[in-house]
Image 1 (tube, rainbow, N blue to C red):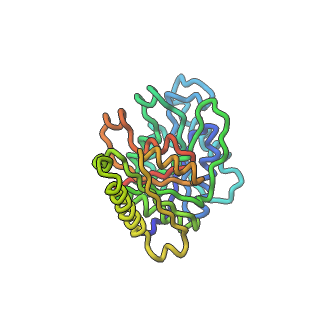
Image 2 (image 1 turned 90 degrees about the horizontal axis):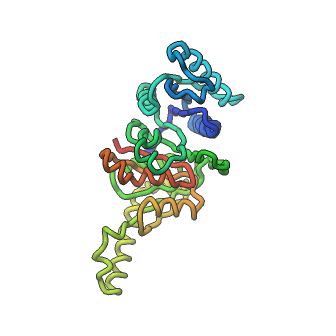
Image 3 (image 1 turned 180 degrees about the horizontal axis):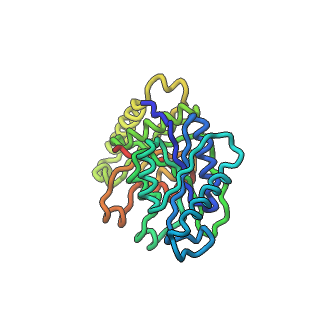
Length: 301
């Protein structure tokens, strides 16, 4: 099923990575002939980015809003594209989700921020919360750790797209979006299924000959299922590659992306309870944190 992208929302916090995030939004909007919204959320209690302390928040709101409009205009620069700035006050996750719903957005673009350990345990991140609250896919660009040297620019357009396939409802929707992207950019499409050894403990108890046959049968079955996901007519405009890997899904997907010089990873996301999310995280969260390239998360909801 072809997924249309008619409205794109690009979220910026005016960090040093903001220009690349906005550039991605501009290029995608041009490619899909989409409406572009560029949003910034003013969080009044934490306004160091605006260069001054806040004594009377209400008095300074207009100044902050005007500053944000000017910064967005500077980020767009001379690009010949129609865009609409969206500037509001509040909590970033809540406001970005609200704006995406109100404007019937098809794709949100943001970037990760370096955070690990206890800080992530207690606070999570805006990106990880957005993956669970947005009504549309989230395209996450890899940001930089504070104090780190700049990384090489992330690639556009996406010529090699990897989609993690576990045959669930969320993975099926992720595949739809990856197929649409592959069609738009005439990309290589890599369908990868990861088998976790813990799910096949009995396999390792079989005699060598029986075990090898079982593994080959399993590979053939999964490869057939992966191939069956792709409409036959799509094979005329994409280069399709399938792969069965063994290990932890997030480790194997990231490793595969690094080895094969992938430009975009597309993964589905399913809901998690608070305790599970804090203590364990999900495959999608971990792929986003460790990926060498952009990641699109897609919810089945």
